[in-house]
Image (cartoon, rainbow, N blue to C red; front, side):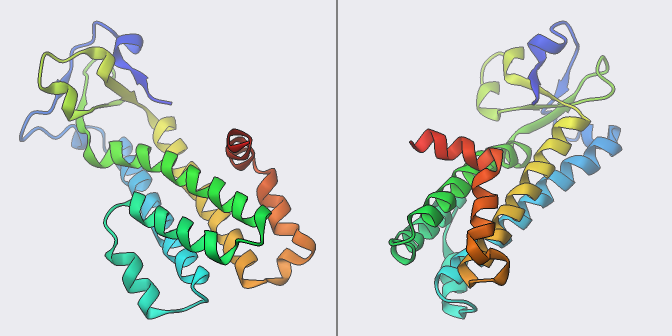
Length: 205
């Protein structure tokens, strides 16, 4: 998990948010990992579309157009939740697992949004790191508590979390399709046993 600069290197000099400056170019290896982390979210959006279409009975051009017309992930998640509440109203265990998956989507989206919308920088004192800061905190004097240090493992963790999420979505689509792999509720039990999903299920209880 990225740590505040105030904790990692409170006296480090920083270069951040300067027009024309290219901190990612100074750290090409980290830049590739950052782009891979952003790209992994595109896969999440693709599986979300697949879930929505599946809830509407399979390959349906109208369902696809409706989903893609929605602005923002919150609206898309709400659309899936509304469709699921109707389609799965008598399948409580499946609905609970899907709601847990949607909660993970919401969490992971926050990490993606930081990479996509926050301001990049770096520090000569931290050659193995990139810096990110919420631009809303830069209106006044910059507080180093608001500047976050991203290293290799932080980008890898985001990508891996999104990859796991896509795996959850794929298995849930198999459940909706009545796939043989879910015979006896096997896939549903598998999903319910995933730590990420268990945590969300526990919170809802």
